[in-house]
Structure formats: C-alpha cells, structure tokens
Amino acid sequence: MKYAKQLELFQILFKNGKLETGRLLGMDVGDRYVGLAVSNPLNEIASPHSVLIRKQSNINSIADKLQELVTRFSLVGFVIGYPLPLYHFQRPQVGYASEDVR
Image 1 (cartoon, helix red, strand yellow):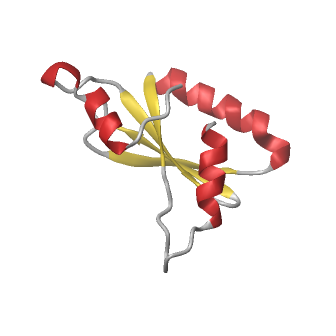
Image 2 (tube, helix red, strand yellow; image 1 turned 120 degrees about the horizontal axis):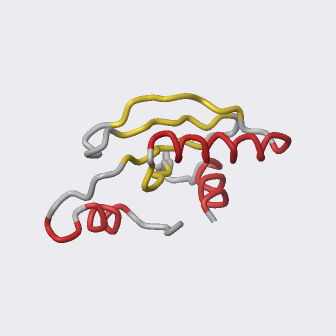
C-alpha cells in the first residue's frame, strides 16, 4: 500500500484527466475505536459503514475485517483521517494514525 498526501491522492484518482473508479475506505482511528466509511464507486461521497473496537488483543480480527471489506467492496485504497492540531498542540491520535499506516 502506498502512503499519499491529499494532493497526491487527488492526482492519483484523476490520472489522465479522468476520475479513476473504485471505492475507498475511510478510517477514523481513535484511542478505542476505528470508524469506517465506504465511498461510492465514483468517490463522490462516503457513507458510514461500521465501528471497530481497537485493542491490542484483536488486531488480527481488525485485519480480517479490513480484508473482508476490501473484497466485498472491491476497494482500491484507504483514506486515513489525520486529526488536526487543536490549540497548537498535537493530539495523541495523530501518532496512532501514523503508526498504524506504516
């Protein structure tokens, strides 16, 4: 899987001047939960899908669930939410999201 920033993701999706089709899975990684949303095939909008409980003991079941979603929706990529700093300090969730992607 390739890590892409916002502009690069936009450029990848619009290769050759047209929108590449394929659904994306949005992930909002928090302390205890991972919120999931699936885009429509043209990536115009994402709809909430489910919430996973995030524990060290269930990392394999989370991976299995993500693989199941990749297959069921023919996902072509993930979009990981990146929490913006609030009041000029970095929130702990930024580290969680960064670590999980790598």
